[in-house]
Image (cartoon, rainbow, N blue to C red; front, side, top):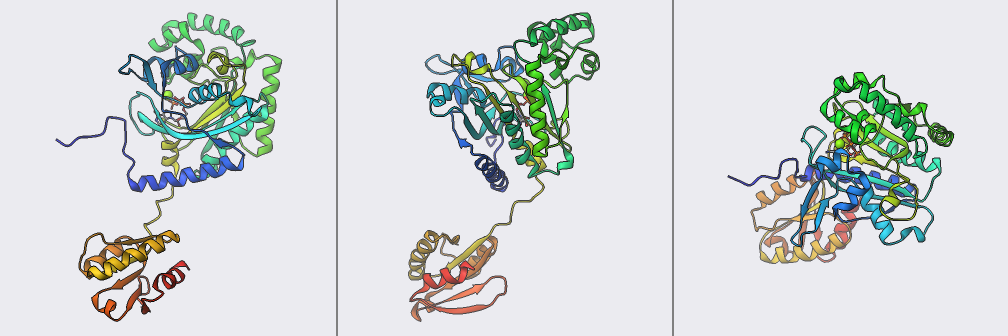
Length: 418
Ligand code: ATP
Ligand code: MG
């Protein structure tokens, strides 16, 4: 039996890698245009970083993390999300001393032990943005803008739905929590087991339940909207005004909560039609309390994550066909040695050039040139070497011309550049 990849872990084959490169280059452009800088943190962190940061009683920490002891008995976890690790790095290196506002992005794999299905893997990838140091509602709006810009570059804007909510703050949340608990207790028998458990540990999380029976009960539950303090309400108002000014359509969803405990005030999800059950492409929110949970100074922050696999599902474009500027078909040892020199010169000058690693027949090499999508093919055999010339064939028009070997690489560079 041949070995297979681990369930939920997927190989990214060249065709898909090309499509991902395209996503990454668009995302990078958007990030750079907003003045963000890249940060890369390890994919492995001490378990504590996530347990403390994300919250003990969240789905992620309770049942989705890849956690293990290493050979020294240290408890480690493959990162299930980016924010906690990035904040850990910001605190460890005191980056906040360098600038009052850090605008960071990262791209890379995340790991969660969930049931694999369309748009849900165990190793998946995200583009992440963190604005650390600003309490301004404009920071929230800019982070949402970034998510919208990236996703709308690959999806029809009419298929996108941006949902926004405020989760309140430590001032106003307890009032809501009290009433919510009362409601959940009164309706306990109509809730799924998970929700009954959440009601005790982390009541707000019930709103994230995907069970339809629970949803129909929770429609009548008290929502935070009616409890938020004037400061939170004003903050929300300013975020929404800024979204309008950015020209980004949104709806308010009073039932929207997120699966991580550290969120405060603004929370959002960007959904796309056509993705089935896993419709959320990007999500995020404000996490002002996270820094102190990780023993740092009281740094406000807001961030978001784009799910790359879901973005890939939305992306209509096909990978561009393979293209090579020039294929060198050299026959015989003398020509093949000379070809290595041309190859080096042309590649260093930015041309995409290929040749055959095997000393094959001309027919076989021409076939290879076709497969490589070569625009031009240079043919040099023993006879051509003797006469100090080579044949350049335009693979589209089939026209051929004879070139002198003398200044061949320079001439090739000129001819194939256009
Ligand atoms: P969901 O409700 O789909 O489980 P989530 O709330 O757990 O999402 P976040 O932690 O907010 O997701 O992650 C942000 C984004 O990362 C999601 O909106 C989604 O696009 C993507 N994502 C999350 N988990 C997975 C996964 N297992 N496979 C692929 N993409 C994922
Ligand atoms: Mg999840």
